[in-house]
Figure 1 (cartoon, rainbow, N blue to C red):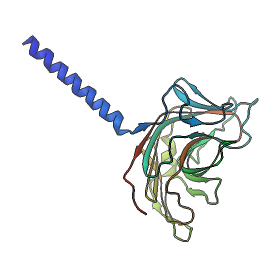
Figure 2: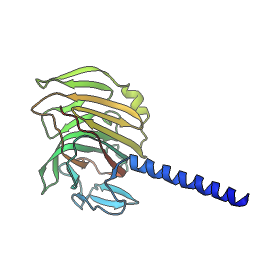
Figure 3: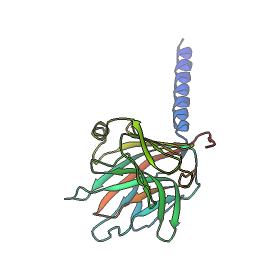
Figure 4: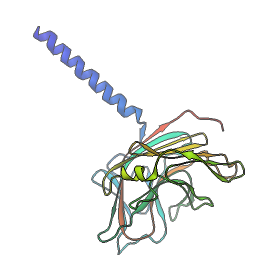
Length: 243
């Protein structure tokens, strides 16, 4: 009987290990190894790895004078689900911290790590975390938090509904602590989620501006000193839609 019991518990543990492995695999490909910035390119004055997290830090002695980015160099994905954890910490005496996750974006200048395109915004303030912003392009804020938006074939913004209450979404964001961010880009539909709550849904039907694929990058925004951290970054490809 003891032998049977031992075999039973071994089988249970093996099943648990397989389930844990499957859960990790379901998140997709890890983009960050937790140790160094292999596979990423950015200004080493701002970007390092600390405590197992990609860390962007500006200081009074080394301020960010123009938005700069840490760029993932191993692909330009199109349809995908991107998940990560992030944390923003303003400097002492300041409330400012602003960053973002670029996707389906273009490198405008490798010398200065300048990037433009879709951005899943995040900040320490109460207004912009979760919005869709078009960095260094012409459309600016493409969807405010809580909005369901269609950018029409003639490139006009049309608010088609809501995905949630902006204040309620903000209330679920952890100040100075870790939050979960998820981005789903499939065909011409773009969706953001923070801590499980959808923040925007955008359908981009503008033929001259809608991006089908591009780089992923992390932002350090010009302004007062702050720290931005990212970890557990995973990319899961989705079946491509022809739009």
